[in-house]
Amino acid sequence: MGTLWPAISVTQRLHSKNPYKGEVVMSETILKVQGVSKVFSSKKVNIRAVNNVSFNVSKGETIAIVGESGCGKTTLGHCIVRATDVTAGSVIYVGENGREYDLHKLDKRTMRSIRKDLQMIFQDPYSSLDPRMTVFDIISEPLRANYRLPKKEVEERVKDAAARVGLNPSYLKRYPHAFSGGQRQRIGIARTLVLYPRIIVCDEPVSALDVSVQAQVVNLLKDLQKELDLTYIFISHDLSVVEYISDKVGVMYLGKMVEFAPTGELFKSPRHPYTEALLSAVPIADPTVAGDRIPLEGEIPDPSNPPAGCYFHTRCRYCTDKCRTEEVELQEASPGHFVACHRAEELKLKGIG
Ligand SMILES: Nc1ncnc2c1ncn2[C@@H]1O[C@H](COP(=O)(O)OP(=O)(O)OP(=O)(O)O)[C@@H](O)[C@H]1O
Ligand SMILES: [Mg+2]
Image 1 (cartoon, protein in one colour):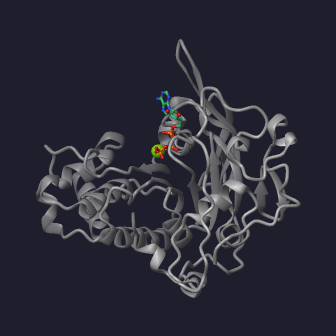
Image 2 (image 1 turned 180 degrees about the vertical axis):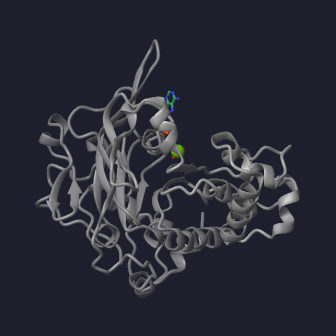
């Protein structure tokens, strides 16, 4: 599987035009995820899809959430926008007025008044758009569902959103089947923008798109972020896209956050063996750099019956007896760099870039 991103050289990587990278910006917290857990229970099993996850998000930044299929990325996204209830923990959103809202404790009315601030964009632009509605109706639907706005204002907001995502105004009368994957994802983004959101959880927003279109949509998201001062939680399992777009990365394994660090640091100096293994699988464009792929041995354990000790120990090449028996929590190893590994202090792990 190839993407456009692995072709980016190490030097280009270091100079990628992320407006927030390398600058000292006063950070203003917009979101606090505190000990969030989500358990799906059925008669037979309990699956802890998200297990005691905590991190803070500053206004205007992009936090990537990465990890293999089933590790809980989408469920965490749903908890953040309160599309699902949490089993434990809280999600604190700092509103434009500076007030803190404990999202999962809010009454329906207050939640409704701030729901528009936290939105989600989905992976599949094909299934999320109703084929019987015109593009105008699709984009305006969230407005009509949430507000009673004068027709003129609805029209203005839809036209503005369409223009921002690069959709020709004449397209608004058409139906979604007439559009390519990239254009459908633009329609999906415009549908979110009409609400004037502040935080957008982007769940694999480009994974379903042709490789040639992925870069356009990612760059569009970056431009919109700058123009509209948006904050992104960017869920992905494509580390090359993540390196390009994010300021910080959270690595999840079996529902737990095992590493959380600024993007450049995580790629250069990972501190969790799982991150090291994921990074070793990223294709490197520079032929002079040896890429030793570290195989992730064994299967991902059954999430309804996770291993004792460190959840990753069954697949870890550095595993010791302690790892098999003692649980490990995320701890700050150096300023801003969090890791959950018994051996984080002593291991010298290999990054890229
Ligand atoms: N509604 C549900 N009911 C029961 N189990 C669920 C539900 N949604 C998710 N799960 C389980 O929770 C775990 C996490 O799923 P989730 O979809 O959040 O993972 P993900 O990291 O987004 O995976 P992917 O990369 O495939 O999208 C999985 O074991 C999944 O089977
Ligand atoms: Mg998912």
